[in-house]
Image 1 (tube, rainbow, N blue to C red):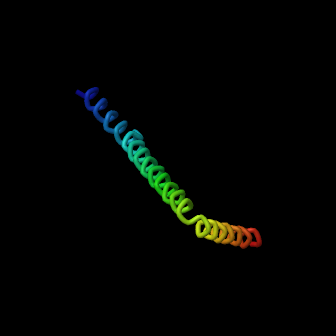
Image 2 (cartoon, helix red, strand yellow):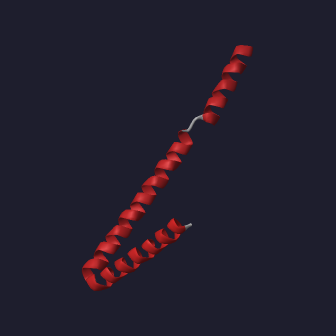
Image 3 (cartoon, rainbow, N blue to C red):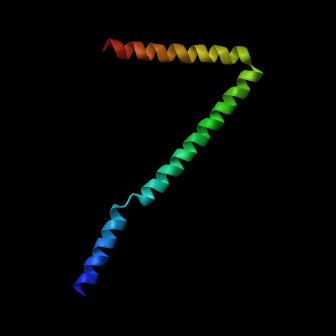
Length: 76
């Protein structure tokens, strides 16, 4: 009886500490994130084909904003 109780306790502890559910959730979140990024990239690609000059302007503005942010962090 004591051996059976010990085995059950160890099985419960193993289930509690096992990364199985977290791994599944992590995989689902990662897949969703990559799907979202792929969709965003497709939208940007379509916008660039429809309005290339506007897309170029937005790209320059984004690059300028990133460069300014990096410059501020480098000073401090």
